[in-house]
Image (tube, helix red, strand yellow):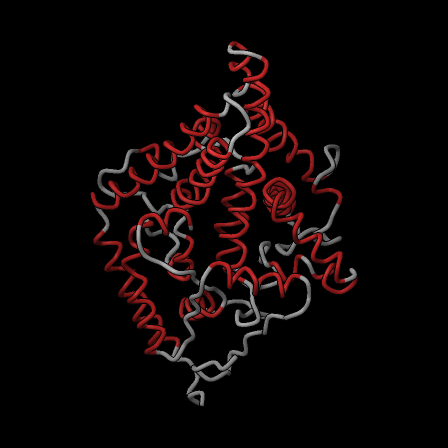
Length: 379
């Protein structure tokens, strides 16, 4: 039976603030070494991928290229741009938020589909501080509401499957640019008036689509599919064609990998949405807990292939900590949740993916959080 006592937000805030301050004070050379290890492993995958890509289309090259791309986004860019390594002893300036991917360094540090300035606003601001609200641009149930309501069931599954292989360029690049465009145009945080599926997101002649093509699509295609494969023509035409095929397959795989790891964190019939604005830091902490799910954690290999997003609850509570600190925080955050009677969701990524798909196709729906609900939530 659930406890009838509402959540004591002040006590929850005090416990989590104390943990946050302790972790921040402890950040130092060990975190810098951990970051260097993550960067080195990501570079190693990329090197193996490109070094074997010219031989023939092959899985070693595809997995290497794909994992290198995933590591640079989900681990390095993600946590650096959250200021997780600012001021940490031993961390080079190029891995701080003031320097990483700024100006011309964007093409050296993080030449991805996603524009860093757009990512900072869409993800670091709107997603983290409007989590689960209609203004959250990454709320999967809301974004697919038209599909959930009107498409035949077979088409819903087809559209979800197609999205998993294409979402970085189909969804993330244009949606982050749209969020940045809305901010500059002083449009509502929730999006353009016509909703998520707006042709302006992709049209190169209108709205945010113009910036998407200029700052995302064209540079990415030029770098990854023209300039980087070009030197392999010096070996042979076969080598060049093999590189292009492997790079295209890696693009599909890294989209799938990132989708599998990132999207299920905030969806499921046991994860909450919110129809009111956040009220204070205690409420912020509560929403990150009940609006987020973790995957299995522990061990460098497991954490690496999850991009340290298996610690998503900890990351949402303390977005400006290092990857290593999330692993240190995890058991203590879980204990704090138990103390305050809050659910702490943690399951296999594949179980969470299944829950996500059920929501996206409309077989399940996410509940809306009731601020007067009891502390112990029965779902």
